[in-house]
Amino acid sequence: DTAVSQTPKYLVTQMGNDKSIKCEQNLGHDTMYWYKQDSKKFLKIMFSYNNKELIINETVPNRFSPKSPDKAHLNLHINSLELGDSAVYFCASSHDRVTGELFFGEGSRLTVL
Amino acid sequence: RKEVEQDPGPFNVPEGATVAFNCTYSNSASQSFFWYRQDCRKEPKLLMSVYSSGNEDGRFTAQLNRASQYISLLIRDSKLSDSATYLCVVNPDYNFNKFYFGSGTKLNVKP
Image (cartoon, rainbow over all chains, first blue to last red; front, side, top):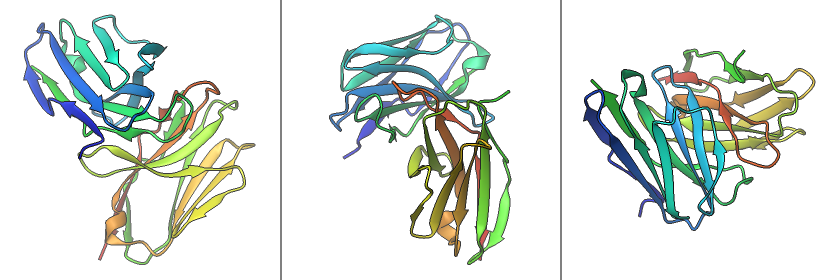
């Protein structure tokens, strides 16, 4: 029974398209995150939501729009995809916004052609 | 300057060896520190938190040096299953989990 699940796991698309990645956690956690891991393996935080409220919004192009319909779900929509958006996007959750352990999903590998 | 810097490796060691990784961080106000492990093409998972007094979990020992702004991880009696990338993680924010990840140090344990 997967704790943090993301869909799709793989996504190949053309430049200029719009795509979404969905994330759900069944851990009862209050806080969820989106991280991007690029080809150099750096994991960078993009967004964080605590009980559906946006609490962290790093310097991310506004083509990226997160949405949290409830505290168990955090989706990421990307408009006008660019080559540089190719990466693995990880969703994560934590018990609350300060507890140190993050539980990651398996990642969504996005390739923009 | 990157928030967290690590030697990318790879560190190639035989089974049973002791291996140590270091990581440096730039923000002296950083509050909390962790080591995560990431297997190839998998998600990161928490290995251990790092406390100011140093802490040990089985074969793994983590140390924090606030004055020099570095964190270390020591693995004793390496196992084949320890082969992975080890990510140093620093949180400079007291109010949020605004984690900064290093790019990781790759460890290959050979038979």
